[in-house]
Image (cartoon, rainbow, N blue to C red; front, side, top):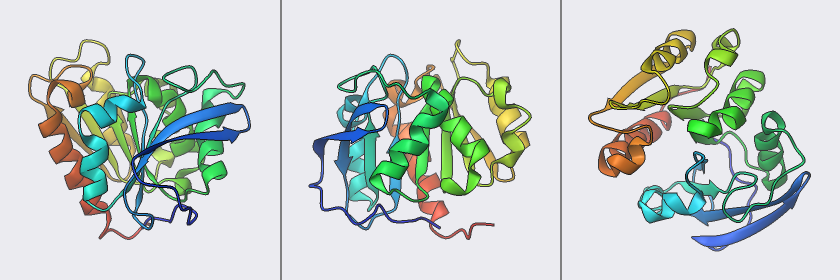
Amino acid sequence: MYGNNGGDNMTDDQSHNLEMEGGRVHYLLAGPEQGCPVILLHGASFTAQTWKQIGTLALLAEAGFRVYAVDLPGYGKSPASSLPPHKWLGKFLDTLHIEAPVVVAPSMAGQFALPLATDSPDRIAGLVAVAPVAIPHYAEQLGCITAPVLAVWGENDRTIPVEHADLLVRAVKQGRKVIIPEGSHAPYMSDPEAFHAELLKFLTGLKGEPRS
């Protein structure tokens, strides 16, 4: 179901800087070297550090996943990139030799994750879409996504309509929508425990699913 991460020897839960085409990228790394890879992106109000602060990085690492929390270009400790968003995530995966990760894409991160999921569907093992932007923009391409999709929305999200979740889930082959009660546009912040429960349920479920 998942690929490996290229067999690097980086120390767990450390800050790393990657030199790649388009500019330097900062990310946090945690979890066993042979764990199934998970990429944690972030919204415009947050950074990679957010996932450490709310415990996601440690939780997934303890569950046996290899977790990369990434500062997107121009955020956190990553400078702006000369690569456009639709090319950036694929180049990041190429540079670190990460094969078939699960991508967690909240809000702004949709412009990085959705192009990869629709244009190169075999490159991801799963997509956790946390009220991402740009779903209607990719409406005609969403059906190309072959990986299982979990759409997570906060009940009180006033930024991205829940109809976008329905559009995504209806379009893909394996999709499920979850609404976090009283959750905000960033439901992982307003109720980390509920978000983590749904995320772990999705990730552990993927381990037993063959890819089509």
